[in-house]
Length: 133
Image (cartoon, rainbow, N blue to C red):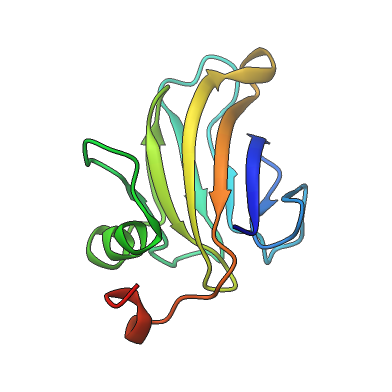
């Protein structure tokens, strides 16, 4: 693991590659909340860099591992998706790490952000190692 912990995702970019995760990062960040703010339902989680399909909702019955998350993004990746409490999102970061975001409070910080539990795996993944991991 590179990082595991609670992270508030707001309209400021969140760099999942830094240790600890950096909220309010540069344009090299991984995700941000693109919702309009208070009362948004559902909130929108968006990926950076712009236009890359680096997010996918996890729909399995148990918590995914690194390879399952990577495969989900590779097959179902988008650059923006709706999230509510309990949603699990697989992410490929700007530095090609795999991360899992679980939404624990979609109205955190008086409705100005999304509180999440985040796991970022430390090693960079490639298509050659994805199915072998």
